[in-house]
Each structure stands twice: as structure tokens, then as C-alpha cells.
Amino acid sequence: MSKGWSVEYRLPSADEIEEDTSFIGDVLAYMNSPEGELFLEVGEIVSDVLERADVGTKERQIIWEDGERLSITASAQRIGVEHPEYPLDIIEQNVIIWLESEFAPPTYTPEQLDELDRLTEAWIKDHKRRSVERRKHCDCEARTYECPRVKSCFHGVPPSLTPRSERIWG
Image 1 (cartoon, rainbow, N blue to C red):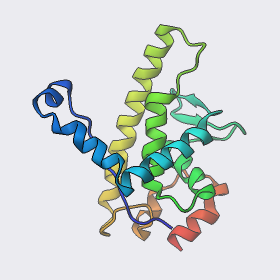
Image 2: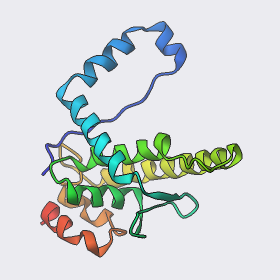
Image 3: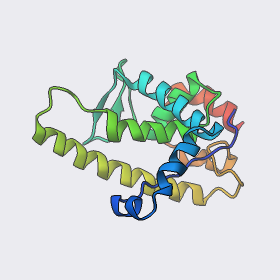
Image 4: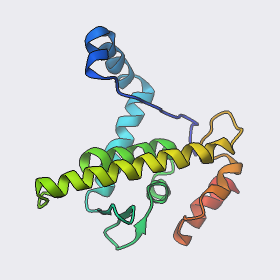
């Protein structure tokens, strides 16, 4: 079960960093905090789990080694089934980070990588927009997936994840 932690971040521009050097100190302080350590730990697990996954950016799906095709949210939930001790929102954020910065097939040409970046960026932007809409239905303090009102927002969750869903929302 989640501890109710949620991490939202925005990286500052290079100009902002030059103007305010405290950014580096803030990042280091966060990374050494319990929340930062948790975020890094979850990131390592997500990277390991998705190491052999592929991505269908046009279909906006993560293609798992077993052939299952899942959305960002459903992929986070699948990882959450195996790692219920971690908050789903942090798992999902790390799935997004994996898509943005770790998934890059070595056989892709520079043009293919540019197209991958363009499609991935649009996919993530749309996903985040829809996530904000889903969370508007949630009036709990933590605004995490554990909120019973969010249950109806996961229409695309595959049946294989139902037992986890029942534990979270039931």
C-alpha cells in the first residue's frame, strides 16, 4: 500500500540555474531525503523491469517482453502488482522518465530517434493532461491512485491487473 507520497517536478531552464545556484543544492538535498531515495529506488526497479520492453509510440503503448501492450498507467500498475510497497504515482513518473530518457533503440538512425522523441513528447503531454483530468475527480488529500473515486478512470486496465485493482480500491 502506498505511503501517499507524490512527487511533481519541473526542471528549471539553464538561465534559471545560472541566476539561482541554490537549485543544485536543492536537488542534492532532495536526492538525499527519504522521498528522493524512494524515487531513485523506484526508478531503478522501473528501469530494470522495462529493460526488455519496446515502445509503440504511434499506438502509444509500451510493449512488454511477453507481447502485452499497455498504456503508461497500465504499465505502472503492472509494475505495482509486483512491487506493491511502492506508490503507483512514483512508479508512473518513473515509467515516463524511462520513456523520455532511457528508451532509445541502438539501431535507430538519428532521424528515427528524432521521430521517436517527437511522438513520445506528444504522448507524454497528452497522458499528463489526462492524468490532471482524472485527478480532478479525486477529493482525497493525497490524490493518489488509492482514492476510490479514481477507480472509474482506469477503463484501459487489462483484466490481468484486476486483483491489484481490487486490493487498491476494494
